[in-house]
View 1 (tube, helix red, strand yellow):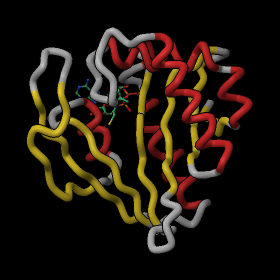
View 2: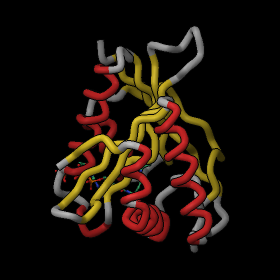
View 3: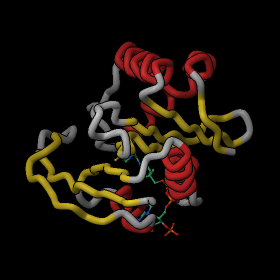
Length: 170
Ligand SMILES: CC(C)(COP(=O)(O)OP(=O)(O)OC[C@H]1O[C@@H](n2cnc3c(N)ncnc32)[C@H](O)[C@@H]1OP(=O)(O)O)[C@@H](O)C(=O)NCCC(=O)NCCS
């Protein structure tokens, strides 16, 4: 089941959200953090998401398997006057125990639906080149706009390229 979380839901699910983020970071995902993830850093991150959800600039979708949080994705709504038609898809994460069952793809479909409901017609995102997420984005109709070398550092200290994607969703 995929549903939109409110700011209060973020607090209610804070343990699951922190566990999901830690699991993704530990799995080597390039999502802004390096392992080992400090629990305080995880809490601070989700608190920043809670505030963005509260002020209406962010949509947070969560996939549950029973009571367990299995995945999330976010939509960062551009609030600038010239960008109210676009949004950035960020932090798609599926717990390692729930991967390769279509959940990442389902979250991408749900976030696209949420973007449409907000009147957003252009979606953008980026991901480390060669990651599983690249296959998910290609498979869900995103076009490659280009790539930037040496964009993000991995846990072993290497710099990796990022691939920029976009999708018009009319
Ligand atoms: C990216 C991620 C969300 C995918 O979630 P998922 O639920 O496993 O994705 P899906 O099951 O919908 O996969 C859809 C397709 O993507 C491709 N894919 C997904 N994971 C893959 C992998 N590890 N290796 C190769 N292809 C993969 C496959 O084509 C897959 O279809 P198939 O299983 O029928 O072959 C998950 O791997 C994850 O959480 N990674 C860590 C966080 C991360 O890097 N997020 C991206 C930030 S930009």
